[in-house]
Amino acid sequence: MAKKHELKYQFVVVTILIVFGAAFYLFYNYVTVNFWSDYEVHISTVVEGKPLYSLMHRLIKLCYSLPFPEFSLAFLMSAITLGTAYGMYRYLMERMGPNDIKLCAFFVSMLLLFTSNLYIPNIFPNFYTHYTKASQPWHNSTYSLMRFFSTYVICLYYRLYDQVKKCEFKWSDGALFCIALTLCNFAKPSFFLAFAPVSLLTFVYLLYTAKGKNLKHLFFWGCCYLLSIPCMIQMAGVVYDESEKSSLIFSTESLVDYIFGNEAVNGHHFQFLICEFSNLLFPLFVLAVFVIIKLRKQEITLYRLVIAFLMFFTSHLQQLVMSESGPRSAHGNYAWGVYGFGMILFMVCIGEWIHAFLNKRISRRLFAIGVICFLLHMICGVAYFLHLMQGGDIII
Image (cartoon, rainbow, N blue to C red):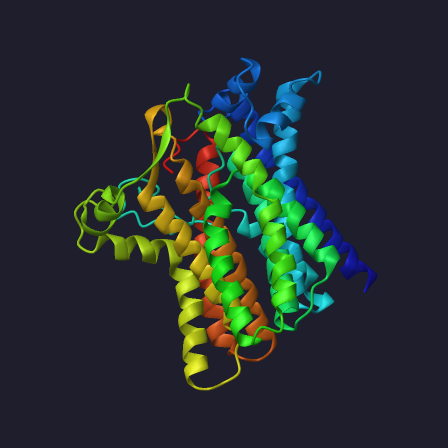
């Protein structure tokens, strides 16, 4: 028994060292401009004394005040990556339950860092489609920081959802949620722009199902959202300052191109369906199975899946209709949210899938098929990460 425990411990330590080391190698090459990335722009903003509008810029400034700035920043980003995995591990443990699956939760949380759409060589001309939505951008520091905090926000969100549903509200969880959401917004507002509308819908739903009995608890929870907004107002004041000559615009051009255009899949008909299949094979499979189980009037929990899908597609719509004019028009800042929610969708789906299996809602064979679909996505993500580690082009 002791030997088995020792082997588990060694597996965890070795996995952490491999992921940390690989991430450090990639980030160090980004920071030192050996590989192309957005890090050069973010660092130059700090070094040249331009206005610092995000939390990441302040962390870069801190690193560049230390004796070995490039090393410090790469180390910090690697730690943030492991912190993201730990946030997903915490979520999975809360959802999956028993302590004897800690190793499974750890392994899955590490794999989720490499969430990816499926690479289909015969259809896609590049490693990724133009409209990839589930894959993880490793080349942007502010995104990595936003993704890190978002995992804790989602974990606390579902915890508070369950509490308010029972007409309860734990102040400790509310305070942690407020802090995590504020830091997430301060890293990059893209998460909040999709998270807030869906949260409002869930508030209405919870209020209706409880017949107003949880109004007080919803008010306290809503205050947490409001307290996280001022930092975004400050950021907008810097980003959309008159000297920047940039502004937010709404356009359906990308949406029309996504549905009717031929750019992403070399003229194949129904390109958006192929893209959605590539991005969401595993989540759609899980959703389809759960809906069938529900239609058969068997006991299954759907609300976590529904909320995760709503957040994903809200961020996806935001990616397609929102953009910026002026110098920031090519930055794609309103597309970052969909990548983060892509990873979160996979996290929620694999958590529900394992939870359903442990509670004998699905058979071993069906569970294995779902796991294979999940691993296909992760394998493509690892392949893309290795592609980046060799200095490969970024096509997200």
